[in-house]
Image (cartoon, rainbow, N blue to C red):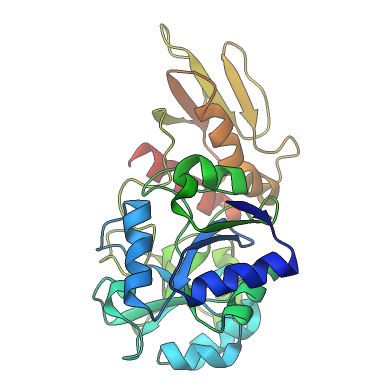
Length: 313
């Protein structure tokens, strides 16, 4: 059931969360599939509906800064980053406290936490009086949803309520930073550019390459359309195939369907449009989607991370 995200409907959705149900809701990044994070049976429903393996942890969403210390052990770095970027698309991985069920963390001794920067998400957490565990509201490894209809297309009536808050502004998932080790490490590039995090912490941050799975989005294949996807630096149609093109800013000849991320070459706009463009190309009846490479600076890193995962690299 898709409901417009009015105050009354957010309160209805909050009651569903309290009773152990599932609610899909907008965040600034993508739509999340939420349940009461401390209710093991409710969180298990997330995994069942998404067909998500239990080895893949989920993020807990909070609405108050003080709640961070209820869920994880906080150090000075976590406080600095939370003050700088919350509410916003940054997830902190911290040593977990016993209150957090093992199903949320895939049995790990660390927990991923963030405070979303979307009024609907924050109200839902506040009205439900719960911490909300929420991965993206899609089938496991498939394209993330940035609109309510994307959620319904994949999950249908398996979700109790889908709150329609319009298109997500950021359009790619949160940046995830691991603070459980001496040197902070980016586990997933996302909505906060690494350069901005480095300024706050005043140190160089590495991106994990073959790290142990501690957070969502670290498996080899993820965020994938049904149509095969291939990344090319200079995209050209493949002979004998109907080809769709995911272009950065310019059209190219010979393709059967074309989506442009940003005609201005704006990485923020490109990130916001990424999944929406891929959803359209996935419905364009082409044999393959060819994705043009994006400059790997700022949000370009997050876009290329998603494209590589979609290709299965």
